[in-house]
Image 1 (cartoon, rainbow, N blue to C red):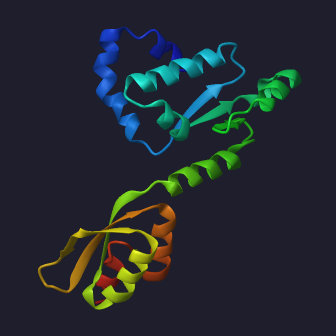
Image 2: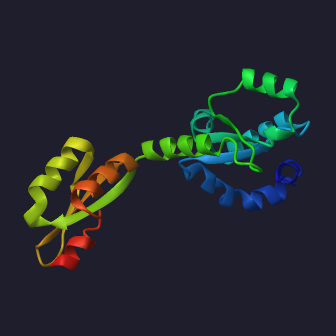
Image 3: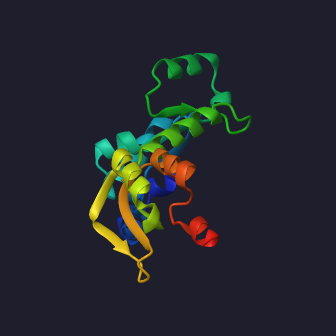
Length: 187
């Protein structure tokens, strides 16, 4: 619904919103929900893609971060649906928000993308438990040994590592919370 707004936005006004729109470049995943029953659905895709490029996203980033949610598939004729599904891009998810068709597929793809995204993660634990925690971290992820810190008491340490959601879940399954608060409450 905002495509007409973005498409006809005066350049001066676009510049005013540019800083806010540049935040899109930091997202792990972007959902572009399109009404595929609209006669100008392809123009809508082009306008959004051009806007993302204007705020600094490269084409490879757009190709990997943007999931096109093709909404209102229930309004397509049988011929339109067949033609569309025959040429379904890898980053597109047919969906009917009205009845939930395709929602599980969308959630699965989002989980996969977000799960692969790595972020700089602080992991805090007692020094007395460092041997097994550090062994796990060094085996599973990339640890930034330059940034290891110790609390003033000398009993706790914080290690920084590049972790995806799968590694975070495994760590929490074996050792508890990343911030170590569950262990601090036991002490």
